[in-house]
Length: 259
Image 1 (cartoon, rainbow, N blue to C red):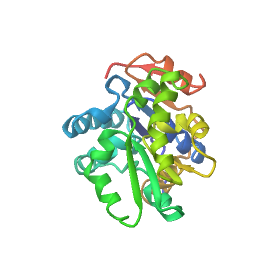
Image 2 (cartoon, rainbow, N blue to C red):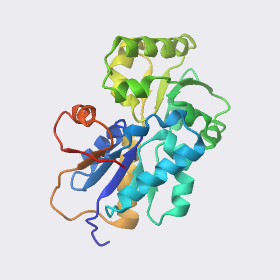
Image 3 (tube, helix red, strand yellow):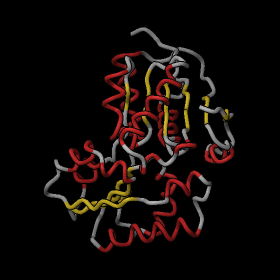
């Protein structure tokens, strides 16, 4: 297959999708990446399906204008509500992110798993179709109200965050779950706090590695890998860039742009 030096585009409703970007960047370090944080419109989880589709199309067009060869929808809510429309409208491969229910169900000993996600993801048709496959497992759904906004505000370690997490996780612990699925790309940044609340026997699963491997697979089969020298990733945000810079440990340039 010929090489393809065009960038990989990645978008999210804010900074959370950088957890997905990080997994892709580690697996494919020579690929140029362009990351788009639509933090001005975060969180997507409280918006209507029509609004989510419109925002996802706007984000896609921003990345296509920058010649992206593949687009990763690094947002559970955008994937579950809009990816079918994106695939039908644009002639570029899309990779979505969905809650990693299958590995949790497969490995659960108690046959009770918890899913912490946004309202938009849990309400979506795609999510309900996925859950319906696992009739023999009790799946506890918990909306993470307020978590995305606290992360976007740079308040990951705030007392309010700890209080919310305890209120969401305690009932699932008491219900005897042994796997917790993080159904939002923002939530991996909460793993240190979550681990302090969960007993040691409860496993945490997110989708980052699976998305990175799928990206590698699509490049190998359909598009081609970059043959260029390693390049710096590009990050865009449409609000104050300081929180995004902080989550990236001030290693990369972040461009503020109104879009």
